[in-house]
Amino acid sequence: MLRVIMPEFITPKEAAQRLGVSVAVIKLWAKSGKIRAWKLGERAWMIDADSLKGIQKDPRGRPPKIGD
Image (cartoon, rainbow, N blue to C red; front, side):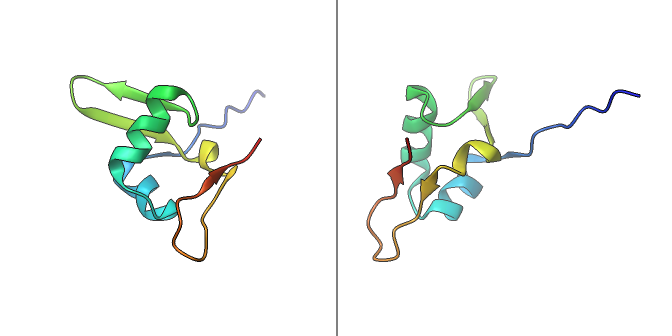
């Protein structure tokens, strides 16, 4: 039997909270391809939560860096 694992999708707001950045930064990263995201309609975005794993939140409050 074939099992399909669905990715976890989160909103840009949830992604921003996880990383300590603004929603605008999340949308910029999505548009540039740094994180996987899909635009649904005119305004809605869904972010693949797994694509955030390479991004580390800086404990000093600085913007996180993208992992290679």
